[in-house]
Image 1: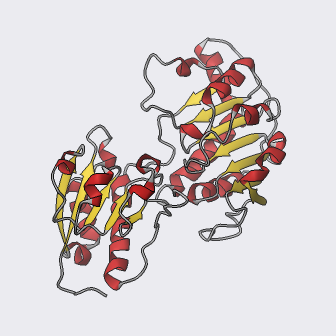
Image 2: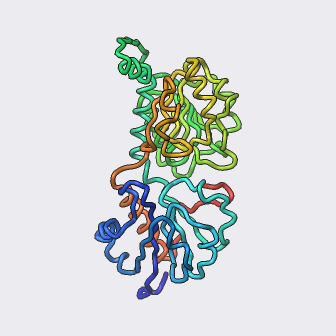
Image 3: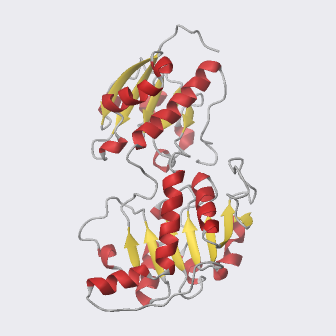
Length: 338
């Protein structure tokens, strides 16, 4: 429990290239402060843009809320105790062992789940109906009447079972799919709220090769870490059955995109919905736009118009825990990278 009269300095950092929904600016803070008035009175605020604040010492900052930051700047900040990231993934901050040992790092995992669940259901239904081919035929003014079987009873392999994976599992099961999920440990996550969230079968990612030939759909929701980079490799894509489809709403580097695009061009892959690319945004002259069987979505699977308010509500909830001397939610493991 902290001194009830003590004030803290929070610095909020934004990127001007991002959409306004992601900006942690005075207007966003004011809106959130109305919902958390008592807590907001304990905090003195500063705002920064595009990392310029990191050029000078963070001598007066107790807490930092930002998507990215220089390790040297935060390590040299004598009062800094806690950093909260605006996204769920922290791959842009790796390696985490370069951060000062006493710094607490939390992320925004969990604020995306309602939107992500809808996106996964939409993507699965689109792929099952062969919408990529239907939309291409429309663009080419061709009448291409494709008859497809219902999705119920088909198999979805889910790579990753964090908050995104659990909501993807629930969405797929609601559609009647058999869901096989893989995570690092092969054990159910603590965040699994109910049996409705859990897949029909959960295994360690080391068993992925055994199950890949059974998949009608492979959905990627795992975080990007050194262990998951390139996880869905060319060899594993080749092990999938003819016509199986891929959905990725995690990070591009988990999947061998050149190999996937080649399988789409040959028809070996039945379709893909990709929400993440590297680099982003995808350039206008990129050949990726024209890959047959591919639906490109511009990193919108998990984000809502009130994104900054969701981040700030999560931060205020953790600040309340801080004041009460309780453990913070969403602490990132430096060893696991998420």
